[in-house]
Length: 489
View 1 (cartoon, rainbow, N blue to C red):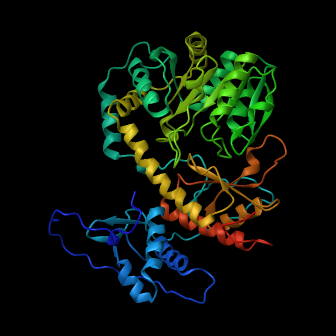
View 2 (view 1 turned 60 degrees about the horizontal axis):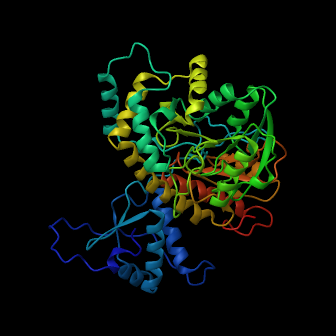
View 3 (view 1 turned 180 degrees about the horizontal axis):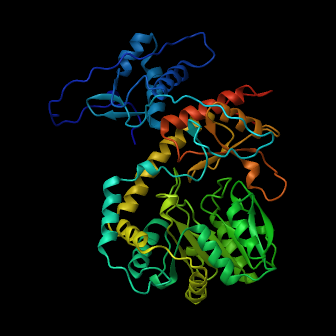
């Protein structure tokens, strides 16, 4: 990671090849010593706005820190700090001995905002294609998929014969490839005969509910939590038991002892974003053993984490009491419709029977394409690229919105906590300015105990994330008693 602009670093000792010199652009920047914002913040904000508006294009060379400092009449340290901030946010890139440049994909024209009416009291802004910026959660950056690798995977799928009787567990080659991928990426050690190929997390939940639950069984679900999980268990006739979560995730010590199973998202609690600490993971596994309950671990976006070391999966801690669910919906695209379920061996036959009874089968070509992406290493390369890309967008969101954000260490979304009674109005005002967001109250089964916005940074590029967050920051600054975008609460 580049820490300082490259014009502060020595050039490499070997001679660089001769290339045409690209002259720096004239920057639309001024420094006002009488403004309340510090000089470094002024310069960074003006450059960020110029990048977001497309006044600076990808690949353009910026003046050196020395030259810009002289032009503005400020110290070089001030300009260096501003450049460094934009480096950290992903707007700029450096080339040794050459200069500082606008990073690819970091600049773009500002799309026009489109207003739309919103019903009074609406908690969720539904997309209709009119918004300029989508900050809705749960959507990956599908444009980041390597087209060549994608085409190779589907060409490979077309070369394989169609089996006369598909294996209801999924193709053996795919399950074998998943054993290596899950071991390397998530520390899940399982054999191919412990894996069932599914159409994603929701499909895996349907299999668990059909195979292992009876009407009236008590099922613990996180509160707030994933609405689709509640719907699946309710459709089976289960009695839902809301289980409180805090900033770290599920509060294990409050779990009742009469649950048949508990559903949890420990890698990045949905939606609050907490990462369940190891002591709580151990306590949860011990609780399951003591009560005879099962844990359903939804690892929907566990591949994406930032500035933190990976934590062991619950399945890795105690595979006898955990059913592990994963998906390609967040790493690649929901359109693929492929995921996996991992469980102890004695549960696989009943789960496989449920899959056959429900017709929950992933198409052969999809399985072959995913197998090729795994076997070639393309899926893991894609995850690494997206981890870097999402980290840039996350940094921009943190920089623009600052305090009040939670869940920033993993995943593709964060929560911006807001004062009581303001989230719906803020969401409506954002939509009027072309920015789609979700409100937190939607994820509560009972009365909401917290208020805020759930902001995703997977669906929009870096410049759009910055624009959307600036819109939200402006709205928050206009709230009664506001203390600035960095401290909305």
